[in-house]
Image (cartoon, rainbow, N blue to C red; front, side, top):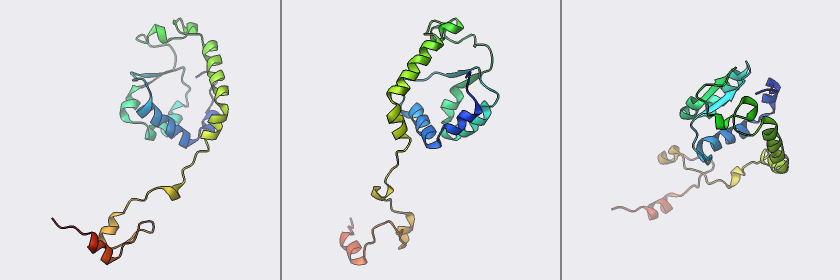
Length: 153
């Protein structure tokens, strides 16, 4: 997390964070065993306060923070060359990530503005409708229509 500052947190939109966490938990194409976050900053607990309500407890138990050294049981093939591992170097991974971000730049900007048109959403009947009450967005039926549709077994 070198170079990451608390000010970066202000740039994260909560709807985007919620969608990302939903993706990680429900739609990610690979099965996660653990999430290791290395070189954590002292303010990471502030970030986790925002993330914890959005994360299932199973995933939360997989997250492990490391302030200094890499844990002994961490697979070497997943570590960047800079840390003595077999994966690509951090600079190479950085260039690859930046190229992906620039490739999808316009889509990322547009996707942050996605909104649903709630007027087209099918409304659910409320429990209050059972007692003759109505909700302002449910269809009102008169008594004759209700009795015509009534089927007794």
